[in-house]
Image (cartoon, rainbow, N blue to C red; front, side, top):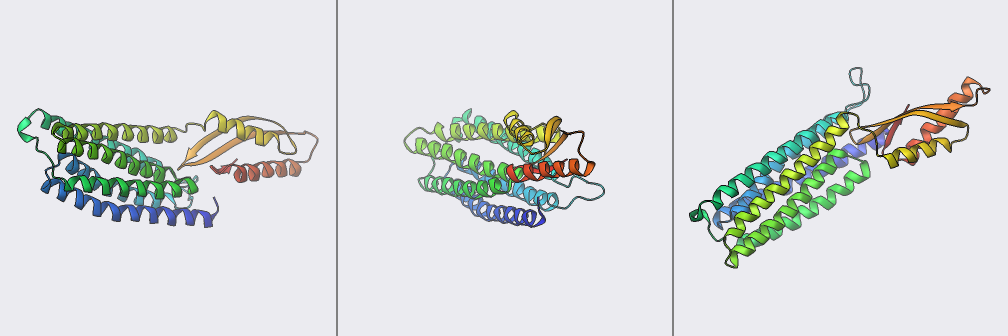
Length: 287
C-alpha cells in the first residue's frame, strides 16, 4: 500500500471510530437513563451493551494507531497483525457481554415480581437506537470496504448487531406494552444470544488470520490465472497467500524461459507483482 493511501486509510478509520464514540456516549446515556426511569430491563441491557462499545472503540483506535506504523527491524512485515489481535479481543469482549446479558435476563424470568411493564418512552428510545446504530453501520462499512480494514469491518458489524439487537428490544418493549410483560426479558435473552454469536464469529475469523490461513480458493484461482496470463510467464508453483491486517501477502515461484537473461526474468517478476497489486484490491505485497 502506498504511503498516501495508508495515511488516508488511517485518517478515515480514526474519523469513523471517533464518530462511533460520540454516538455511543449519547446513546448509552439515553438508554440507561430512560431504561431506569421507564422500567425496561431490555433497554438497560442495551445501554450497558452500548457502554461496552466505548471500550471496544478505544481498542479499535489503539489498533488503528499502532497497526498503521511502517515496517521496522523488529516487524519487517509491518504492524497489521495488531489490528487482527485486537479483533480477536473485541470478539471475546462481545461474547462475554452477551453471556452476561442473557444470564441476567434469564434470572429475572425466574422471579415474576421483578417483571415490570416498561413506559412508552422506552419504545421511542429503542427506535432512536436502531436508526443511530444502522447509520453507524452504513458509514463504517463503506470506509472498511474502501480501505480493506478488518477491524473496521468488525466494528461495523458490531454496529449492525447492535441495531438488530435493538430491534429485539423494540419488540420486547412493544410486547410488554401490549400486555405480555415477559417479552422484555425474553428480548434481552435473544439480544444476548445474538451478541455471543457475533463475538465468536469475529474472533474465529481473526484467529484464522493469525495462523496464516490462505485466501479463498476462488481468490487464489483468480490470482493464479492473472500470473499465467502475464507475458513471459511459462508456469508457476508454490503459490501461497496469507492475510496481514486485512491485506493479502502473496508468495509465488515463477517459471520463465530458461534461455532469457536474469534481468529479463527479473522484469517479468516485477510485471507480475505490479499486475497483482493493481488488479486485486486486497493484495498489498507480492514476493
